[in-house]
Image (tube, rainbow, N blue to C red; front, side, top):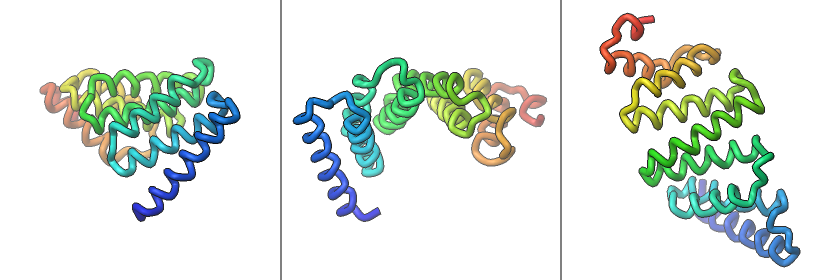
Length: 169
């Protein structure tokens, strides 16, 4: 995307936040969406600190009963933290996103599978192959696509753990 378009979008979203503040609707869906969308733009611009700030504001304003929305924002916080190389904390948010999506969408929904892959990838970055295998196998057992990154990473985990028999399954 053109960086001028990002700047224009940020300007409009910041205006939306100001309007919501004037209307004292800082907990409205529109306000939370604007915060999250500003985070999305900063994520695309690879300014992970700013992305985290906006996602975190939205997350903290969101009612705990809004499991789907909290799962989405938790996943976004995980991406921002991963971008900041704060993988241990990112793991916490990725796990929250995964658990919320399982609860709301079920274990076979594409967004849930995406979350299981995010959890697996962060475990791999943390050097926790055994934990990664759990989430890669969830992806493997429920995904319609039996190839690509997750399949290779599952093979790699078993190889690292010297479990050739499982690696070749």
